[in-house]
Length: 397
Ligand SMILES: Cc1ncc(COP(=O)(O)O)c(C=O)c1O
Image (cartoon, rainbow, N blue to C red; front, side, top):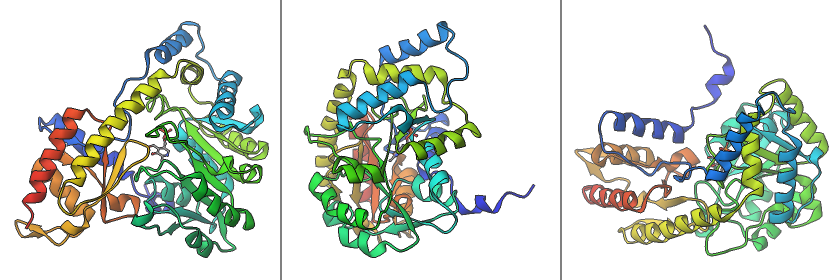
């Protein structure tokens, strides 16, 4: 059977395939240490699980409203009021099966064939393919290491054409762990406003911020910008609920209506039980989030200082998320067994083969000089992994 032309345009998610490879090796008895993990290593908090069990026991197991139950929309609205200081009505919220699904739906309702969508690199691996699946064109914008890979206003300005239909911003960023400050967003704001460019703000890591720094997005900069910004968020990372598949977005009633329509002809509602669990997550006790973020911050400190002590490695100190992006390009051109390391793919393959260490090659995020390390693993694993990294790097000639 012949597959559609569309399928030749996209790649399987490289981060998922690295984790699959690590799992397969582990199943074969190999002691793999994986820095490839894209989810918190903590369990979903007990009170959230209990809400799901209660939902099952109470028979809350049928179709719900396509765009999510009112109880969950109200919890999301309170969260937007509390954490963002922004007011939305129920008609401006739609719940989907994960933040990724929200982003996919958005691309389907916003973009026509040939539309250009601006994506600063390094970017989350799925953005370009989500855009391509809408027959639109991802336009990758360069950023600079000395700016912690954050978008410069002049780069944005230069990239905008009559075909530009959107900009995707992600802060804190996967893969760099960098976060935009209000002052930085205020510099992007006039350009976005002048060109009427819709912004998709992917806030999925918004609660994972270090050193008590304030988190801010473009919609919070001014009321005009709020109207032009679509906010995507979800419970996956904040409440260790990656498997539950609940994401949501806030936008105009018109756009929310369009996303709901797509959902009505594709997935229908997100899982009823998971919606009840998400309500418990958003309105319940929040100390589980604080504890997780404190653990991530300790690991970040430890891992950053160990990576910084490696010769010729440049580290972007993350201000949020559970990722560290580090530049290993000075090791490119070196060799082992006559095999020359040409880039991040070769280096990550070498680390897997030589010391059974899984890392994600930066090329997957559009930045070949770097590797991404997740610290959603225990401190003991981090130390063992970094010992292996040190050994493998020192064997390169
Ligand atoms: C930047 C970014 N956005 C969105 C998502 C989607 O998360 P989910 O679909 O689990 O809500 C992820 C998950 O890895 C992510 O890293």
